[in-house]
Image 1: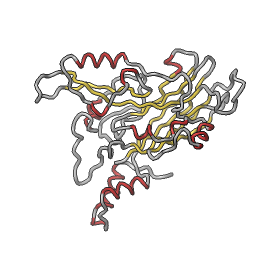
Image 2: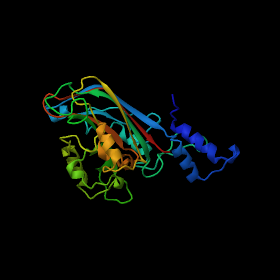
Image 3: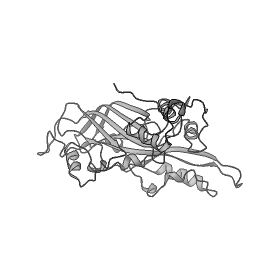
Image 4: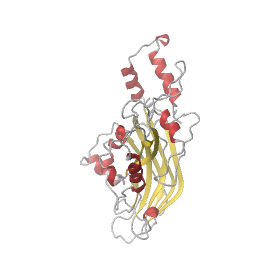
Length: 320
């Protein structure tokens, strides 16, 4: 079994490469390259088991939220408790103030002891390095389609990935510029996209606004709904085999260095294996920022179609 480093492990290696006592004093840029080349990154894991999405059922049953990963960078956050999965897409994240402050989203990141730090914020504006999806699933085992049985063609059960980001607004408004407003917040879906968030830039929060803004903002949050694709999109993580009732395992890896366009032959090969042609360019991974969560959705369309999820696991790796 390969070694899976913690944040403390990575910091120890960085210290060895940086400390002249150990015989080296490499520039930080070179150390970053070494760490990335070795794929020596911390990660978090979220898992889900025994779920079903049913085609022809209400939207909540045909679009099943399997799991939500921990906020990016939230490994080893002392006593901050973060669940692997919440049952509703727009639930407030409990104890969000603790982990949001720790990650530096609302305040300056917590100072670490200079002698032996065990946690630091993720490195860079786009710190995510890799996402690994491990899926064990199958469809209903039959269909009325004449073409594609036993392949990934005309398969109407599949998986999509989404992004949730932490956004904040003043819960107590103040007119004094030198008095910071108290913040309220939640983890909000930005993918699958929702209408009013088109063009929204999560890097510009928190935002202190004129009086009355907080109430309006919270109303928009309550009314917003994710847009779920009706048919398997070109951005899907993985489709199930068509009319194949036995569980099949798929492992899909997305990397920040991926650079294959949807019009390349490699994209056609991936599509033949059930993957989305527009998932090979690394854009999803590079889009993630500190505090973002990855969501995994199981989907099924049309009456009789079922996406039976035996096991699902998502691992998110990031640089420190």
